[in-house]
Length: 126
Image (cartoon, rainbow, N blue to C red; front, side, top):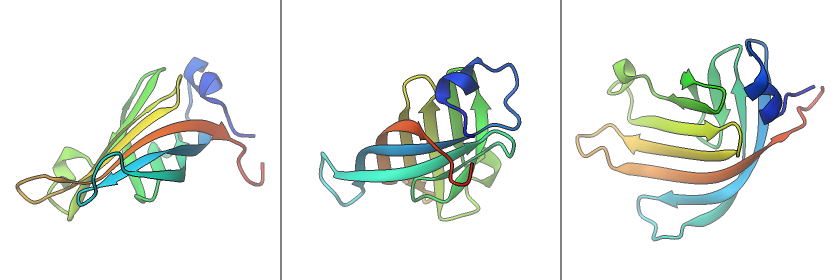
């Protein structure tokens, strides 16, 4: 059984918890005008592996977390190793999720920006 936002936020330890997210919101790309495109996206917060995956961006490690918020992205030491970096936050209480994918070129221009409203979703097979 998957955990809800409130269950995970209230636990003293969350090592084995996974939350599957079903999200909707907007996506803006570097060559697109506001307000962007309406999208639906799925994601997973895996507290055991300390990783966030999905949202069409692959995955990224959890960099920090509190009972209210998870911050994930490209670690600063790997910042220039690839062609892009990921920065994201998930509010565990409200479900507000923000993800920015940036170029690693000197301008660090954003490539994709996601503003999502996420809810926990039953995990397949559980």
